Image 1: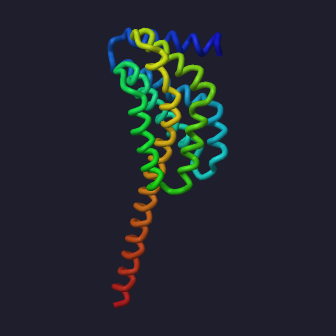
Image 2 (image 1 turned 45 degrees about the horizontal axis):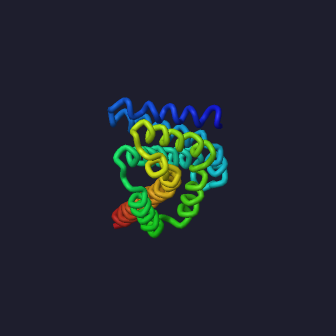
Length: 193
C-alpha cells in the first residue's frame, strides 16, 4: 500500500484543490468514495452475511453513504469545520434514527460502519485528505484527521435510512392490499344484494 495506494491518494488529494472549482472537487471526491467502498473486501463479505438485504442494495447504499460523507470530510478540510461538531451532530442523527428503523437494520448499520473503514478506505482516503490539506496549506494533524471517523459514520446513517424507506414501502404496500381486499369484499356484497 505504501507503494501504490498512499502515494496515489496523496497525489490526487494534492491536485484536487488546484481545480478551484468546488463542484469538481465534490464530484471527484464523491466518485472516489463510492468506488473505493465498492472495492472494499470486508463490505463484500458483510453483504454475503446479511440475507434479508440484497447484496447489491447493501453495497450501493453503503458506497453512496461513504461517498457523501467523504465529500463532507473533504469540505471540512477546505472550510476548516471542527470535527467535534460534525461527529456530535451525526452521532445524534444515528442515535435518533435507531429508534425509528426496524430492529434488523440497526446491527447491520453498525457492522457496516466497521467494514466501510477497512483497509482499502483507510489506505486511500486518508492520504487523499492529507494531500488536499497540504495543498491548501492546512495542518494535517488537525484538518485531515477524522476522515475515517466520518466515513465510518456514513453506513450507520445510510443503512438506517434504507430501513426507514423499507418500512415506509412495507406500510404502503400493506395499505394498498387492505384497500384491494376491502373493495373486493364490498363488490361481493353488492353482487349478493
